Image 1 (tube, rainbow, N blue to C red):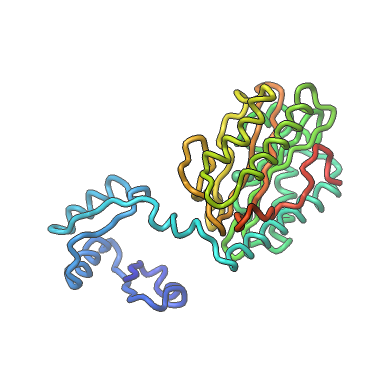
Image 2 (cartoon, rainbow, N blue to C red):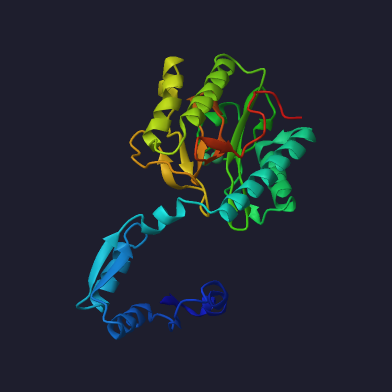
Length: 307
Ligand code: ZN
Ligand code: ZN
């Protein structure tokens, strides 16, 4: 049974035609759930614990007397981890739009601020065939790049040092995700850090195949940066699933027990962040295949400006 308020009555007729559809009156959600549950003899009702507020749970529990509410996590997310060929195709097209936007925009770039470049990239993504950006474009120059989720501001680009760009396009509802960092007159140890991050990315990609866990991939990338003396500067996890949301399961993190399987789409994105100096992150988007990966990212990883 698909319950909706009046805003989605018509849309749901097109999108979920196979389900019984019920439009509930304003403020009558809990009452309608109670009616549907009682008509169908429901004794136990699963709720998505990660998305239901304490207050929402209290109202449901009060309005559904005699029905057991069973908290669940990851039921829908587990299904979404496995992408169909059509879903992978949408993600591939989104990645193509994002890469085209980077190549065109940076090839024609004559200088400006982080904010200017972020806007130019978003314009190129949206006019290049995407319905939206998959998250707000990150452009971070110099010391601002030491913040893993920096916001673009007034710093000059390219300026001296590093420029980090993290962006994605959304096509047919599906996201892409990619990061590149370019260097110009960058102080030590940024050039060395860039080379180490690319090696960590390669090691992470090489570790991916069906049967390994998210933790295995994280370790493969992290060990490279630790061996190069940058372990402490890699302050986040190695990657994440991508799909309808920019961050999905499975996570490629130290403690991730998720097992990778064919058809999953994940990022590999090691980084090195040096406060006051700058930051390096290089991120590819890959599909898990029967024997390894298909890399959807084709833009060069190197530190040279992609003109
Ligand atoms: Zn990213
Ligand atoms: Zn990412």
